[in-house]
Amino acid sequence: MTATTRRIPTLILAGTMAAGAGLAVSAPSAAAADTYPTGVVTASRLSVREVPSTDSTSYGTFAKGKKLTLLCKVTGQSVGGNSTWYQLPGEGAIYVSGRYIATKTSVPQCTGTGVVKATLTADQWMRRAPSTSDAKVRVAKKGTVLTLRCGVSKGLTGKWFYTSDRTWVSGANLKGASLVTKPGECLRH
Image (cartoon, rainbow, N blue to C red; front, side, top):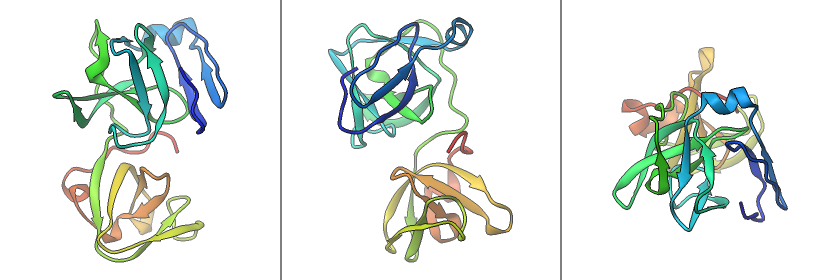
């Protein structure tokens, strides 16, 4: 994988160990590698993305022929008529387009991830964690369209969503897709 200026979350790659400047990658144990489906990169270079969209941050690329461990699949932006994206296992949710991955076995649907667009109905603070008592990061203005990656229920404070810019937003002032098609529960944040 080629390194970029951003640090990529730790990845688990099928049967390999690689490293580069600003890149932390670990190989799975033999048992772990056997539990995940794998796929092979078919493009000359395949970008690793922060969310299942070519508009999101690219953390680097994999070369053609690279065997990858695939945690699960989600529906995202269509690439060449294929809207399947694969989440790579590791310490953060990152994705590769299914358009350029050849698989021999089925890959399960992700249960804790997804991308949902929602619009703010009022100005609202974006937070470091899912609570009004957590640090404020910035104010998002009414009408802002947010990309939601997952959600959590927080007792009396209701539903909170983790966004593509790595902040949390309360569901109190959201409308749109989040009310009809909620993203999965957050697996790790």
